[in-house]
Amino acid sequence: MATFRLAHVAALCVAAACAEIAPSGSGLSVTSAALFRGEITAAAPPNYCISPAASRPDTGFVVMGRCAAASPVAADGFITVQVGGPESGITASDAADLREILVSDTGRAFLSSAGNADAISVQATEVEGDAVTVRFRDRGPAPVTGLDQTEWRGFFDVEGRLVTVAVRGLAAAPLGTDDGEVLLARTIAALRQANRGVVSATNS
Image (tube, rainbow, N blue to C red; front, side, top):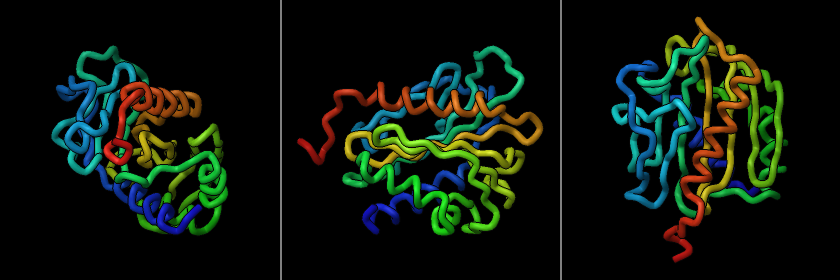
């Protein structure tokens, strides 16, 4: 993977770790948002909504939590999405390289909200096309107070832009492994579906 793309990954990891996440069910009802003045659409997975107060659409940053109208569940997930700039995206070849990087000291430092590779234990990684997913445990301070240490994170391409999705549960009600994987997959699918057929500014 080219060095400039590694810089994009690092920047998006930091952005995802610094979210101010609104409590689930606190009036959230928005399911989609226009990013970069409409160039990209952020869409939430089923039963999840976007927090307008915590999101920054102009910089491609979105925070999601359970919708106010969603049925109660045993454990809620908190989701952050960061979309990179034009030409920051990754190819299938890049994805294979990124998977290798994520298990290295450099990659684990990227995953850590504090930049501490020693605090990160990578538990699983997977590559599917141009998408890379990783499950890890962060023994450092939580990026947001009250979140669990286990995180599911995905990196993939949307119209030539690198997209990073991060999913965590609450420390008091952690997500199960399957729950986290499913929520990450549903979020990625929602974002891909919302941008299917979009022509990016770099291709117009």
